[in-house]
Image (spheres, rainbow, N blue to C red):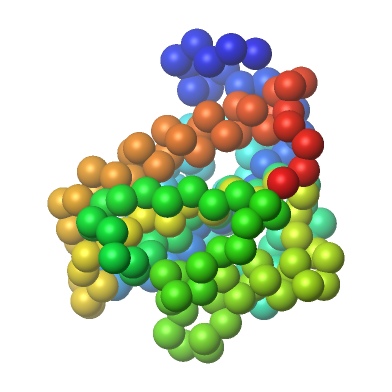
Amino acid sequence: MMADGNENNLMDGSPVLVIGVGNAYRGDDAAGLIAASNIREKNLPGVKVVEESGEGAALMELWKEQDAVILFDSLRSGSEPGTIQRFRAGAQPVPKDIFHYSTHLFGVAEAVELARALDRLPPHLIIYGIKGRNFSMGPELSPEVEEAVPEAVRLAMEDIRILQSPERPGPN
């Protein structure tokens, strides 16, 4: 199926789980939740959307029997705020120094690596990280992150289209 610009014209193929990670009251940390919410609003067939705090064990439980997962989270790296980074978790390690989970120190990157060690990674796990600038208390995103969220959603929509198409690639 070729992209036709109509995001709602996806095939009703394999289920895709979309996970939004973050805290809605910590500034740019909400970017993953907002991106996932934007996907939910599209009401796509074969796509389930959940929100999660980012605790690693909970993430592993969510994706344990999933074939295709797309996860959004904010990140802290040396890049410019609003920068979007995409990781195919099965094909590459996820840098643990840019995905922070402050409460339990077992977050997205640790969950991926533990799942990899236990052979419990979903065959298709795509992670979108959006570089944040402001993680202080409050619901507002910084302008750079607010601008980046729709682009991350657009990129994920293309991944969903591919994951649900007959031309679906093999596992990561």
